[in-house]
Length: 292
Image 1 (cartoon, rainbow, N blue to C red):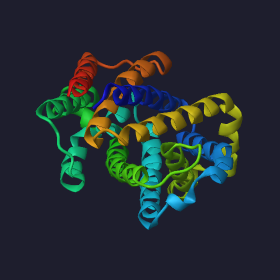
Image 2 (image 1 turned 30 degrees about the vertical axis):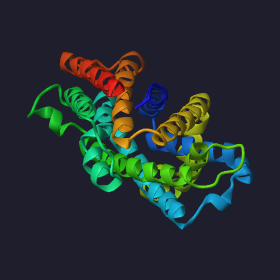
Image 3 (image 1 turned 90 degrees about the horizontal axis):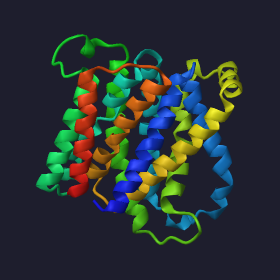
Image 4 (image 1 turned 180 degrees about the vertical axis):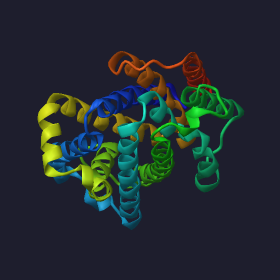
């Protein structure tokens, strides 16, 4: 993993943590996240005129559909978890993807992991586990509110990480003409097409009155969060073009560090000492991956 790719991933992690904290802090996380996607779709709609549609074959459209469904499930499950669970508990669980991605990426995508890379992933996983459980194997941490939806968010994150990696590989090999980058175009397509699936799952909390109330009360924060989400995911897609998905997803777990700091300063949550140890382990794991 190159230094440039790691820098892109770390910046993406910071932005990802910021809009997740804003979503958690909203009175209706589902409406807040839906509006982020809706505003992104509307603002970027004119760029559709600049997309080289000839580069999109049948496989790529199938991948767009697959990532739309998985992102729809992800958005619904994440907002459900945020409605009842603490950010410092829900977020680390939903972002502990490195524990599972390599088991799929290696056999399906043919990726090869070095011994140092494997060690770094393992350290990240242990760190995230300590953040989410306080180092306990049993106890109330495993019965906390929102855990089921947090793990569903995790599963959908694994799925769309693999789909998006394949999509960027296909796009990278396609003839591409025009001013827009492949990653920005693909992000726009998934941001727009996942909204119907998100709405079908969360329609009870996405009424017109709820959407209007959320838009009026948090308009500036919504716009900032929409920009953060756009840049964050575009950076990740750009990194996926050149780096193995297992390393990219693992390094992005540094967002756990950022989100815990934001939760403490913004939401006034108070993580335990064991969770702070987990943060240090996560940072150490990211450094190990960078060395690999």
